[in-house]
Image 1 (cartoon, rainbow, N blue to C red):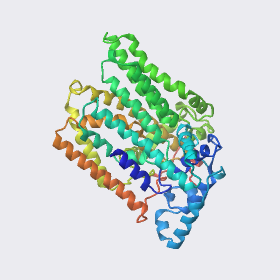
Image 2: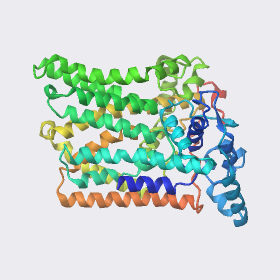
Image 3: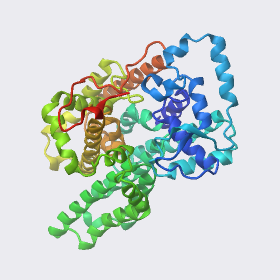
Image 4: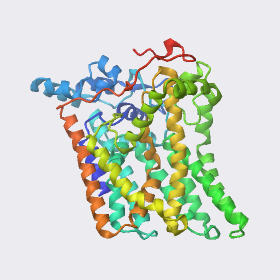
Length: 494
């Protein structure tokens, strides 16, 4: 089911509807054309991609650069004469990508590590793709194939060694945000399954007595985390998970329930990840982009804002003087965790969010009254790992909200959808919690989740048809003046 939904979403998704797809595809084409790794700050989009933007509809009411070069929203595309739409489709089919040609727009995704782009790019070269659309289709299908392994891993662990009902695995495979995040041209298509394997193996080890931990399992976890981090920076959340495992091991050693050498197993996994990807982390720090290499960090560095200490006055302004903005960011982030299509909030009908929250509350609610010791070892382990991963992700999301506030005077993107980097961990916890419910309740919850999935994705289908247009997400619902220490000119929008 996960694979079917992944491929269906990837094939139905309009050309550049997936988040940041033009930039991700351009990075792939650099490897396809033998142009080398896209360098942060200097890489440009492939010229054929820039030429394609006016030829296909997209969420361009959200992207001002696309508007300037003639990009049309789905509503505007629907108003075009059918003959004009056909002409643009024919022109799109002729765009060639057999050689590298620099465009004018900066590739804003060149900040990412190169593994995913190199893997798909070299494979696209072997496939013989010569036109932009053939390369696009190949990248979509290969990304879907990579991402579909996430569902295989989740199902294998949940109903295999952890012994839960297949219905619980089906439930987590019906969570709609999986497909928005990974079933597109994006390095998430490789980062999430690799990181999922690392998280699931860690859960499987922590559920066991520390004395029975296996070195081979931690080597697999470390190698998988290294692949995840080599695809996207949020793979660093494994550091928090590994540190949590070290604490668990130390607790067992202190109680004399495990030998001291057990502590070194999660240390080994963490070391494998850092040794494999340390070059990229060092490079990011050298160019002032922070460990995960974000462009925002580079812009802030030019203003002398580097450390958290530099950010504290702005944090005080946001929380104390602008509490409505802080609350707005929190609400938008929470909404995006449930469903957000191409940066949008409120992407699905309002009742979707109520139903989705109700289903999650029905699963997690009964656990509140149960003693921790009464929970199964896999569920306790999944809760611990999910807690560590989500804590680090929440910190990163809050940090990005603050950085946008410093740059623009408003919180802009809350980016709550990035909690799905740790989706395997909290999905495992949800599945194991659902396994405690009676079979009849499990079936009803799975049915409710299927309704949630259909309602969310069908709303997207209506949007892509051009029947209505979503509001631009670059504007926060609360827009107010910002007092010191934010300079007035720092938040004027173009």
